[in-house]
Structure formats: C-alpha cells, structure tokens
Amino acid sequence: AQERAKLLYDCIDRNECYIGYADPSARSLMNVTFHLRDDKLTGEFLDGARRRSLGTIAGYKTLGGMRVSMYNA
Image (cartoon, rainbow, N blue to C red; front, side):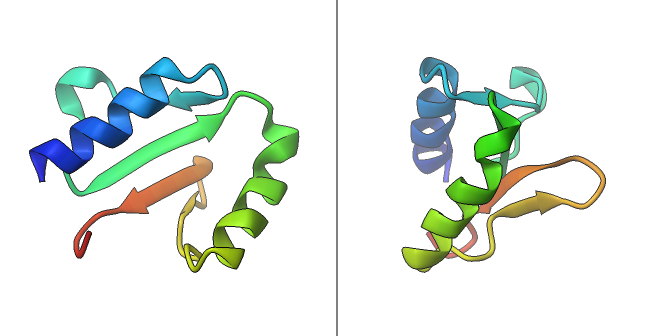
C-alpha cells in the first residue's frame, strides 16, 4: 500500500497539472485526493477516466476534485 500510494503521490507532486490537497504528513494510503490546476478540465478528465473504467474517482461533494481509492489496487 505504501509503494502504490507513493507512486501516485509522487506523480501528483511532480506534475504541474495536479494539486494534492492533503498535507504530506497526513496523506492516506487508501484514498489519494487531488485537483487539476485548471478546474475547467475536470469534466474532461473525469470523462476520460470513465472511458478507462475509472468511473468512481470524482472527489468529495464539498471539496470537488478527484479521489482515487486504492483498496483493491
């Protein structure tokens, strides 16, 4: 779980398209949350994810963004 989460968080932290919203000291190993820097692209991002069978990554209703759950990853 630590290795999977690290891979995803590293990608989010290195890529200028994403913003992680959990403080690094409080990051979950099971639910990785992030936003796109350009909110206008969120719908397109989620559509692309659904086409790749990742249809459940829409984030929290109150925070928006994306949430990737890695329970069965």
